[in-house]
Image 1 (cartoon, rainbow, N blue to C red):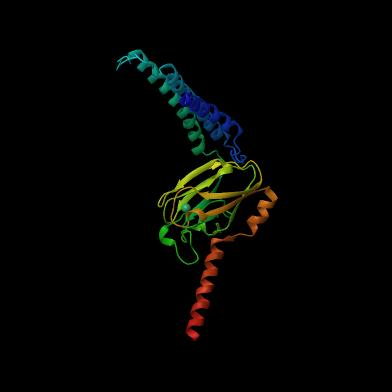
Image 2: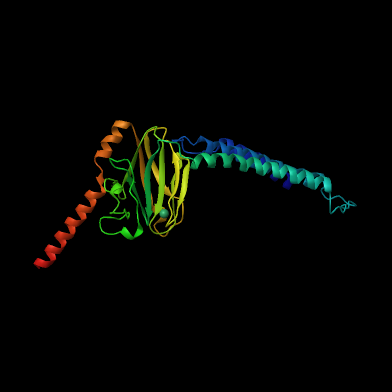
Length: 279
Ligand SMILES: [Cu+2]
């Protein structure tokens, strides 16, 4: 009888805990409420199955408890039951997977007029590149990584010279404008994740992965790395600030272009070599 009671408390308690849980999603800040809907569908289906199975076990423990003289019936196969269980399971699994396929399609189908923003992950910081005056990002190349060019922007591509480079700093995005996030890594696997945007994607060395989203409210949001990437992984944090257009433009004007960064690092090498030769 105690076992029956524990099972019933487990089923009811899980539902009550879910309804009154203090841990819930951060308030959403992007257009991806589809992602929340798919999770809610999964909660309903798995929750229903969990409660049904636990209560069924409780019922069986009670109904078929030991009584002197009772013998179990031997019934290794039951066609009807097998067909029934297999169909219900298939419908349940399909209902959980199908919405995900639609969401995924939208997640990687970038609408026209979307601005590109590059995110570069490295052990253990986040850097960003925004298109400059020509509204086009230049190409990048791992071999180009060096002094003054931590992101490996291709110096021979004229499109890249006016790109704005934010090394290990804060990324700002304008409110209500769709952005395509191009994700790169220069060393190991990382994963760009901002919980409020309901969007994340792995960053794979040698590949450019992407997704798009539209920020739907202003605020400061934390970037987490969602792929174990070494000892500094928990400290790999960054910041995205979603601004009103005027604030965004003001921030944009303060950023350095790739050309400026290259010139600054050349100056530094000159200073370094002149001081070392004067010794
Ligand atoms: Cu990482």
